[in-house]
Image 1 (cartoon, chains in turn purple, green):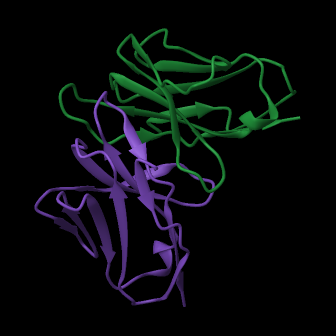
Image 2 (cartoon, each protein chain N blue to C red):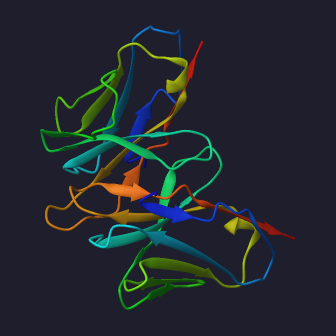
Image 3 (cartoon, rainbow over the protein chains, first blue to last red):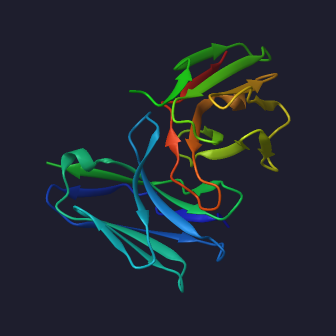
Length: 109
Length: 114
């Protein structure tokens, strides 16, 4: 079983739609979580950290459910520029991060 | 304004011919990482340095080595590249001692093997 699992998608949504991705992690000792965004053939870039109480950054909302060991990312009012692969990331110690293989989002006009 | 710089962006080498990829940073971060990412897969951590302390992942092949001569530079050496080593290689840095900080990635080096 992968340490961090994501639905690969693609999620095809129209502009303006709300879309949500989930990600599950297997190591209950995971301490910190992040969402990264990766455009095609580019490097991952930090989108947001995920806090226990949930957090919001503009159109993006991240949630953490420790009991069920999943995190989520909600994107409201999708823009064409949101089209990318979204990587779920967990920190389990030793200063290293474990990446999921990503969920691809395609926002269509 | 590039903060994590990888050279070259594209590298072509021959099967079995040693190759070195380089990474430099202007962030003065104490942790530097090397990842391998193949198409549609997650970045896979190869190893990381915490200052001069080298941490190898258990499943990183012996064919992959790394050097960190100083805080700013880190190198990835592939001693005898095979066809399966063709991938994007990502360097990343982070700061922080007791809590994990987000990682900052370079643009990556895309390695092709002939």
